[in-house]
Every structure is written in C-alpha cells, then in structure tokens.
Image (tube, rainbow, N blue to C red; front, side, top):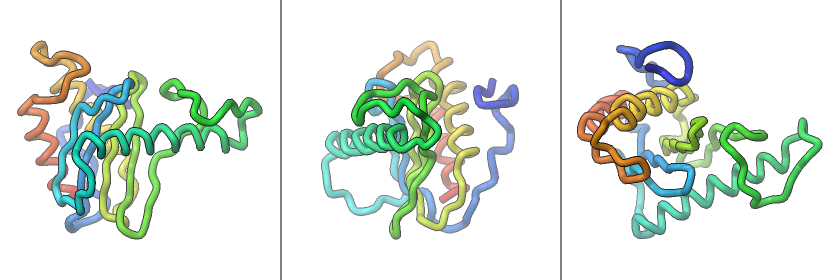
Length: 169
C-alpha cells in the first residue's frame, strides 16, 4: 500500500536524479524527536557522537520548520518562533543546498520525518522520500515484531533501503 498516492509500492522505484556517489546518509525521526534510523553510505566527516548528531539534526529541522511558518507570506497568523507545528500545518520546506551537501526533507501525516543528505548536485528527491516512507510502512510499521518508537532493526527494510540508495549513490 502506498500512502503518498497510488496503491502499492512501485516495483520500480523513482529514477535517481543524478549518478555518482550522491547518497551520504539518512535520518528517520518520530514525532517526538526519537531517531528511529540513521544510516551512512558515503560518510562525511563525523564531528560529534551519534546521539549529539541526532539532536543537532532534529533541532535544525525544528528551527527550519518554525522559520518557514514565520516567513510564510500567505498566512496572516504568524505565530511565534519555536512553537511546535503539527505535521502538514503551515508552510513547509522540502530541501536546502549548501556548497558541500543537499538536505532533503519530508514529514508524513503521522509525524515521521525522513531526511536524506546527498551531494549538492543531486536533483529533486521528493519522489525518493515518498518511496522510502512507503518502504517504512510496508516493512516496518506492518511488521508485528516492531515496537513503535523503537529503533528500526528490520533486516528486509534495511536491505531494500540499501539497494535503493545504491541507485542514488
């Protein structure tokens, strides 16, 4: 079942938008900021321990979401910076690019946040993020052995994700 359009996980995932070593890492957080998954494929320099890195990434997302809501030119009600927003509420961002990486972001209606960090020349990854979320639903959420809110340890999900990321990476 596909939760972002269509009815099933496509047998052929979205076509990668660039070739080469593009996929660096993925983060998945639940709505409470618990890191469910962190994987690296082409690791950049690591400067923090993993737990601090997860907190920093979640804080970055929280701040960017808050900033986009505050800057939304279509909303008369701006709210305050730092006030949590519900998934799908207000304005949202999908990606940003620096000279060394591109961060692509998607938040599901259930509050699952998926972040892909890739090479800066990588194109739009919205379809890839939706595909990864649908893999998560099929292989993790529907797994009777999975406890919601715990780190993802589903081998089938990890294998399928690695295969897909090799297509991007």
